[in-house]
Structure formats: structure tokens, C-alpha cells
Length: 80
Image 1 (tube, rainbow, N blue to C red):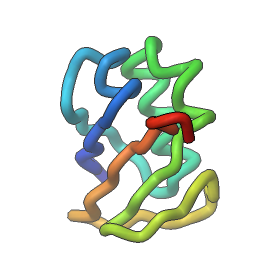
Image 2 (cartoon, one colour):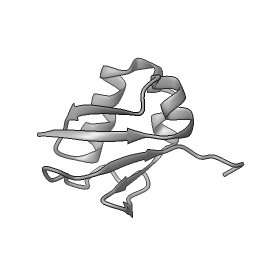
Image 3 (cartoon, one colour):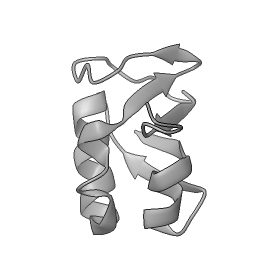
Image 4 (cartoon, rainbow, N blue to C red):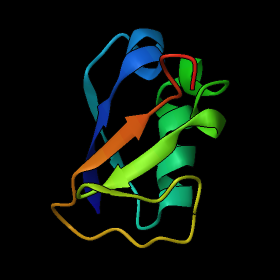
């Protein structure tokens, strides 16, 4: 299914866009799809936390995604 992913901080800067739509059923698939579609994200994605509908899943990759889910990619920022 297609998921719209919002990018922030270093991820947005590297991708040179605010959001991207990818096809994924889990967060692991989403991470891989992001790197495939936007190779500049490869060094950043492993450091990122993922928010799905406002809930943090950190680096948990087994989380299943549902149609219409809001996914935010949050790199470490402000020294964190």
C-alpha cells in the first residue's frame, strides 16, 4: 500500500523534499523503500525514529502500517 512519509531535519535536507510516497506494509519495508527511492537517505535512515500516527516506534521494524497512516521520519536533532 502507498504511504506518505513526512521528512524532517537532516532527512528533509538530504532528500531535498518535505514528503515522499512509498509502497510498504511494515516499517522495515518503508525504510528500505525510502533508501531505494532516495539514496541520499541511506546514511540517515538507520539513525531515525519513526512516528506512526503520532506514536514513536523508534527503530522497531516489524510494526505494520495501515492505509492512511501518517509516518514521520525523525532524525536525531538538537544534540540528541
